[in-house]
Length: 319
Image 1 (cartoon, one colour):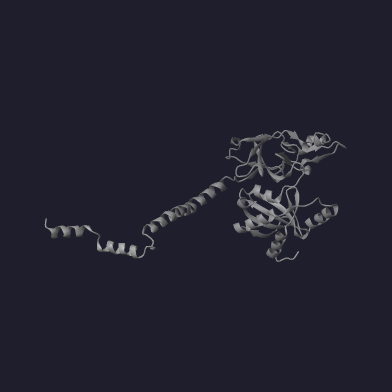
Image 2 (tube, rainbow, N blue to C red; image 1 turned 90 degrees about the horizontal axis):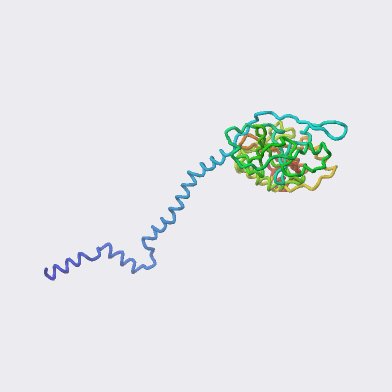
């Protein structure tokens, strides 16, 4: 191999003109970003893209699965009016006058639809953990003068004594319970405390998970027969849920306030807010904006200033 041939071969082994231009560019512009920076951005963006695709595809499916956990509740058997005797005069009253409720874990639960039995076939309630057995008869205790104090004792009840308490699928046990009695199921909903205390409104909204389980809110007249407004958009349901949660327990009302409240509830100044749930049942709250009062379960609450302002704006009223 001649010297000239060796030089030519070595020249062919060197960088190409394109490679030489790149090296010169890096030498002259050291601050320029290297080409691998683009690949680095891919490594950052790719996980974000995967998360986005996951949320678009899987979250609706997960939400649908979560909603399916809430059973459709249909009444199987209408409630009956049990009676018990009072100690004086041999008179008797309907248990419904006292109210059909049970006590569990420091809270009071009122039976839905005055104690109607619901069809929960297919939901395998018995596969849930047993939460307790109703074993203290409040009605019988009242019949004997209330000496045993069952009205505030856990696992005491005015209805279906001896029933077994289970969690109700799709709900927190602190909000709703299923009671099994002689092959039938009854639903009880949080309404207060066993010591007659009032549940915090924000706590009620949270335990019920109103924003999730509500399909629409209906605003009705005081008799609950005429629907005046309906909200079914998720943002409106969240808005009214949050506004209800701002209410504060009302101090013990005076006789005069109770009289004003009673009069207002029988007039066009009172309304019902019905929260229609995914299971087909509903939660009814009574409102008297003119008195800034709200009733949830067994408790009275003072409506917040924000609620009243929103109410006036929505209905174009000035209470």
